[in-house]
Length: 153
Image 1 (tube, rainbow, N blue to C red):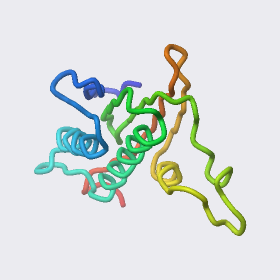
Image 2 (image 1 turned 120 degrees about the vertical axis):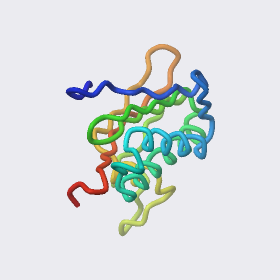
Image 3 (image 1 turned 90 degrees about the horizontal axis):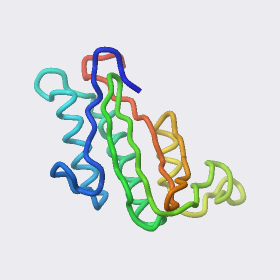
Image 4 (image 1 turned 60 degrees about the vertical axis):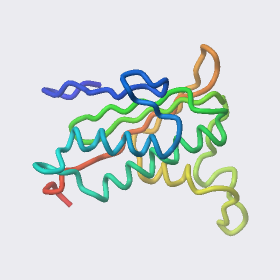
């Protein structure tokens, strides 16, 4: 999707082209911070820090889950747009995360397992999980809103 008057700036995929090598959650967070600092200039119109923290949490959880549960990271792409960042993380597994409140929840609301996917669901918007036909795996695409520091609260 292209925002009016703003060409999307794509980051490099996980393969390491254009000098970017995203192979760990820490590298993905560093890359995300650099993308935010490029799109929302810290000296003239900085991004709201709480929105950046939300983005970094989502990036970290999706990449860590791809590494831990998805057979490895097969692709990583960030696209800053007018009102946030679109993120796509691809792994090698066809298994999709359980819906929040579905499998993995025990009696009386006690959850079995991690907190990463529920955190992604809470912080991100427009979550799409697409199984890949060629070579297997899946891509999880999300949108994380990012506002400027002087924007509405």
